[in-house]
Length: 266
Image (cartoon, rainbow, N blue to C red):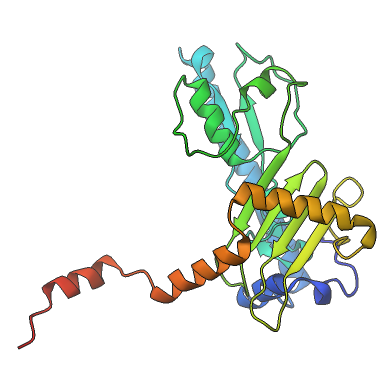
C-alpha cells in the first residue's frame, strides 16, 4: 500500500489538492486502492508478455539484425502514492518512465545509464539512428554518443510542464541529477507561487519538501534559473497565455460549418 505520513495530504500544494478533488481521489477505500494496484500490475505483466511475442517474431524474421527496439511510455502511473491516481503530477510515480534501447549489433546489452533524459531526447536519438536530419527548432539532445560510451558527457536534465485540468494553475518541473524542483504558478493574487524540492538520493518517495529549508536556498535558485533557461518563457506568462486561450475556446468543426452555412441577415 502507498506510504502516506500523517498530515501529508493536508500539506500538499494547492494544485494536487485540486487534482484529488477534481478526479474524486479523496477518501478512496483501502480495498479499492489495493485492487487498483493489483490490476495495474496485472496489466503490466500482460503488456510485457505481448511485447515478448512481438520480440520473438522479430527475432525469427530476417530483419532482427537491422532493427532498433525502443521501449518507453508517455507517463507513469500514480497508484495512490501521494494520495493521487493516474498521471498529472510531477512525482516520479508519474514522470519517471521506462526506457529500454536494444540493438545487439551495436550495443551488446546489460548496460545501464542512470542520468536523466526525456522523450525529446529520444526523438532526436531516433532521427540520428535513422540517418536523418532534425529541424533547427527541435529541443532535445541525441543520446547516441551516451549509449555508445557510459562516460560520454551528458546533460543529466529533464523538464516537464503541465497546464491542463483540473488544477488551480500551471506547474513545471526540472530534474537535474538526484534533485527535482517543481514550480507552481500563482493562481490568483491571494495565492502565491508554491515550490517543491526533493533530494531523491535520500528521499526517493518524495515525501520531504526541502524548498523552504534555508540550507537549500541556493539549490532552489539555481534550479529555477535552469528551468527558465530551458523553457524560454516564465511559467507565470505561460499560465496567463493558457488562460486567455482557454477563455476564447476552441471551436469545433461542427460549429464552423454552422457559421459557414448560416443565412445572411437582412
